[in-house]
Image 1 (cartoon, rainbow, N blue to C red):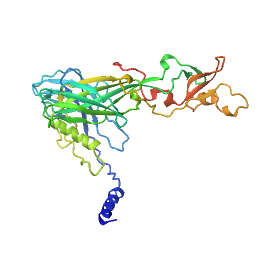
Image 2: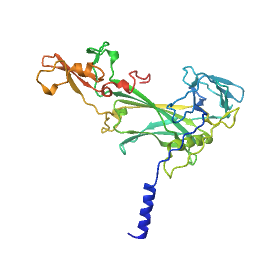
Image 3: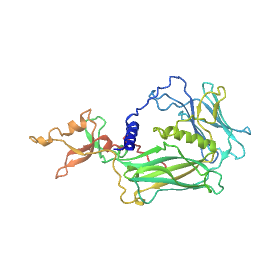
Length: 395
């Protein structure tokens, strides 16, 4: 082994064996800072602003909504529009504002504790429509990649952000025609309102989706990646929908969201960018040094929904149930001297607590008489453990 090889080998050992994870100490401050999420919608749709307070990593709490605040949208021409938290969840909303594009607008927040916050006045940005949402005809890396196309003929958007909501129908592995009665001492047929086979699940995007066309001759977004879905995901087994929302950004707003993306999604290796401070456009009027997390923009939000069903996908797209499932049998009467069936009676398996297996179908003899029941585990039978039985209104 020559000298150069020895040096390279030593460097490899240095970078692969001498790294240790670093866990920074949690901040000891008791301060909790305001977080403002949302967009002032200038068009014909609702404006929803979510207010919350930061929480410590070790607090065991993931959400801390700010309740009881007074929230208004104000123009630089003295117009004012109130937002109301009608559900008591920290989401302050109004109906369509249909704001004129001439004035500038800001958000005004007064908390129940007397805090007073103002965003900077910003001009109305015009968001162009979404052209298409699609996916390639072939599947690469066992993944279906959804993308978006958009453009602005006026060439004056240049900075884009997206959010999406996914909804899909899924079924339990095994349908269940039976259930324990209300007394818990007998197995009876399910009524229609007790079905737990067909459900729906909805999730929201959790990453920051941005792009800029500032360096392009034309303001065109071409096949911007949105979401990657494994080709065997149960999302595509029956029916899948994605609702995409598109926002035009100012250069400053784009930089704010780019910093969020860097701080939350692109850290972890020695080659990644260093975390940076999130400087938004919302300020405490009584304490200018207090950090406020958020950036208020004003734009008409463009949205588009598509549906995907199995008939438009390649034939090799086969959904895989997310859990390993086995269906077994339990009998009303165990034949004497049959060691293979010992302990497989209905009373022991399906009725006596704390066992939680669920009956699926009846076992019949050659005369059609019920002699037992098939059963499986709840995650293989009860779809409501992962979703809701109520179909969305747009379904």
